[in-house]
Amino acid sequence: MTSEPLRIGSRDNVALVQVRRALRDGAGYRRKGFALWLEGDHLLRACVARGHPMTQVLLTEAAWQQPALRTLAQRAARVLLLPDALFKEFSALESPSSIGALIQCPEAAAMRCDVPTVILDRLQDAGNVGSILRSAAAFGVRQVVALSGTAALWSPKVLRAGMGAHFSLSLHEGLTPDALDTLTLPWVATSSHTRDLLHEATLPQPCAWVFGHEGQGVAQEIARRCTLTLRIAQPGGEESLNVAAAAAICLHEAVRRRA
Image (tube, rainbow, N blue to C red; front, side, top):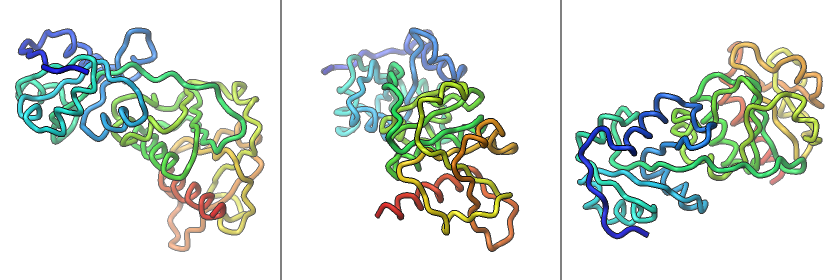
């Protein structure tokens, strides 16, 4: 635990360079030595609560005067104190936070075949991916598997949308369909073009929910491997639901059935 912070004022400080790299290259964390950037005390608390170490915490001079943020910052191996104006220069938020951390990307555990799972098939929108991770963590999903072509799970935009859910999940990404052969749970997909309704179907428990590309849906190769393909009732007549909204409905329905 660190007692006193190191004060920095140079924009060329190594830690600030790392933050800018993380913001500029959302998938850079996949390379060795590349740090993840977490901005805001909510993400930092989620990281700490799950026992993941923070390499460095960066915070403003004003934040250091707040006991709660100072205590949180001191959980890191190193604390850097910045002028408020300098912190705002590399903040990715519309309303800049006053604290952030650099961490190493958590290593995924081995993929399991017996726990509730979500499969993401080429989802492009970072907000959708982060929202699905958040719903997955809330509704008891244990692991999320992202096929190649899906937005980088640990990118800054997905992290912000996930609101800390990342640290509650076992995440696997960049996989090919063949890599899912060990995932022997029943797979369940959604489609607005099928007859079987979600609220009327018998759901396997546990299962792997499959959510597909925002425009193209689930790829045929993946759809053929699904035990069920279900439709969410939409009496209002809209053509389809946003994939993140559909995921939240499906995952909640699975929890409701278990309860």
